[in-house]
Image (cartoon, rainbow, N blue to C red; front, side, top):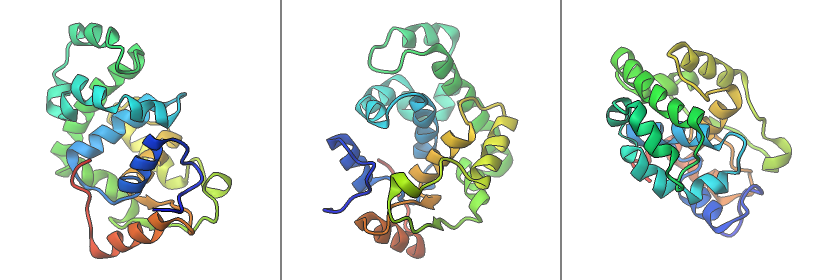
Length: 199
């Protein structure tokens, strides 16, 4: 991919942008991973989180929500000493709280995917930005609604801006700028019902 969105800066950004970002996904593990990582990113660069991603997978049971939901205060103490992740108690505890919320969402809606994708009518929103940084919103009424709904289940670190980044990550919105090769690729996947199974 030669032309990329103008937010891409590092090799880690390039890999993520070219293979994952904006690709429609309904994979439960991946959705929970993105929910945790987007929350962890708050106040930090996305590159920082990408560079810690493998550590996060090890620390959080490969983002198995059922396993993370069983984490105890002792597990939190262990994680606070793990230099491979963001050692922020509120963010670590939020991942556990959110895992428990995800289990409730699955029980009520069948899956986390059913729940979050319902906010866009189960079809990715196709945007057409000329330049990502200059035109893409930080949040939308849809991300406001998703944020409110997730908070209703007790989720933490799910403000509207974080929810919009989550929506971008899992392909609920295609925010690749129009001169980026990823725009056409993700639009085609949306039409074909393509789905990213895992990262």
